[in-house]
Image (cartoon, rainbow, N blue to C red; front, side, top):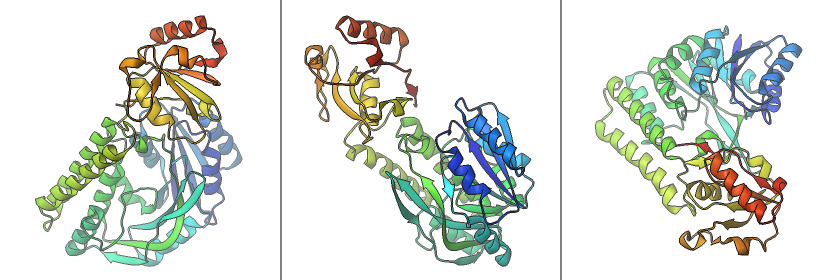
Length: 385
């Protein structure tokens, strides 16, 4: 039997599509473990509704502790000989597991790896397609696989993603147990290093089965300082693990890999139009879709809102407003004063500050200027640093 684990947190918009793609697989012998990590939207209810319709589904409700602990909870409950993961906003082709388990059983491999589609801005394209290959992991081949994983060699195209693979249960349970709970973004890399160390044979298949939903607002694409710091910690942690277990790996190779990772991260920041290292994000972005928005506040929260909201075609920023506009001017967008703002046409005014008491003062000021209360919006920003 196959166990499919889906960690879930506030994914009501995408969850049904994800679940439907799994329960309608041509491979029928599986259990689906839906791990609800303390969701505050309708995700919990959606999970329970599907469990009533399909006896193969088991729902695990737990308090919010993050992705790693949710996956570990699913692994503890999994009864299958093979284990796979799907992220709650992604979906899979209907013949994915039939093909991948056939590859595993015919090859005797410890895990199988496949390609995937990237879904972004209403378009779909193949992000990764592999050539079929079976790799016997003696110490020489394992070294070559590690070089490829660190992007220091183009011997093979192997990625850290846990969701593009199906594992033997004994392998993934042992390997994922070594992932520290604090690692919440990119922890797949630590897991795949342990998998390579513990595997005798791996297989890559030429099929493209997984649909990765690229969402700019999702955790892995928030370019916060904490995100970059944790990525460096994960690569450094994984590099030391490889160095301790691969007699052919050199410290200078690992240093080169880490340098490239740092360089790529900061090159992205330097050449982005906005201040893309974000400390804050607006938590209710869907409320702005199709609206003409005036952003009131040009401090730290306001700057981050400009960065975030400007990325969405569905949002239209009419103007950026601050009472101290003369002191707050930036090369990427002009800040205007209150009098100029009152001449603009807009659907809503978004107050961009962190503290509720300050937001209330700003709201009252706007209402005193004749702006209707139902046009003014404030939500406590998500602090992502």
